Amino acid sequence: MNDTIRKSQEAHWSGKFSEHGAAPAGVGSESAVHKELRYSRLCRVFAGSDDFSLLDVGAGVGDFYRYLRERHTALRFDYTGSEITAGYTTLAAERFPEARFLHRDILSEPLDEKYDFVVLSGIFHQPFDTDIVAWETYMHDLLRRSFSMARIGIAFNALSSYAEFQRQGNYHPKLSSLLDFVVSDLSRFFQVDHSIPLFEETIFVFRPEYIGKNFVEPEFQKYLGTGK
Image 1 (tube, rainbow, N blue to C red):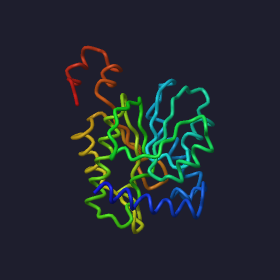
Image 2 (cartoon, one colour):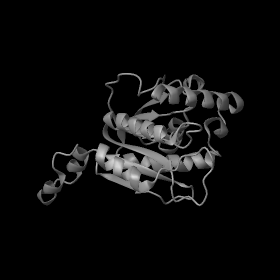
Image 3 (tube, one colour):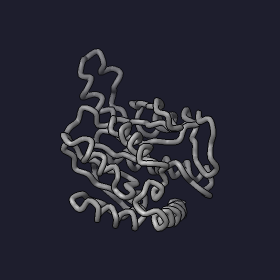
Image 4 (cartoon, rainbow, N blue to C red):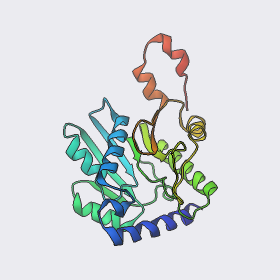
């Protein structure tokens, strides 16, 4: 199933890239303003950290790396971009030769890599002709794999089920169901940001051990346990 979805996604985005190149439309975004608003929210996952490693799943043409380099100049970060569309990866590596961009599918390859944070931006928005049940399974599998690679936590966005309108071909998971999955399969330590004009939410999920390090008072320990 994953292979079928990957091929469908890669074919679609390769076509967009051929048509639009590095422009926002080439990666399915309406404008640079939209993208940068998403990036600003995703960056909240590493608030308070100034030296960390980061995996960007679905890195596209490297725009999140560019955003970090230009808008967060004080940060020290070790960036890796992972992308299933070959054309995106090639262009990203040409634009930013100092960064690491890999053409791969993290669900299909055995990986033992660890990063402090993993981010996934815009990759769950458009299943196109993929069955919704299959797409939801794919989303859950990718989130599980991403969380398994994160030492601290992950950040991802999804289109809101509270949107005033929904375009055909887009996926708006029910927020309560999505959070049920997060708690049952990832961690009960999460945050939801639904406070931007776009019809989407950003969700942050943290490892219990990270939360434990930030709440060391004895009064809190009975709530933490060993976690997942």
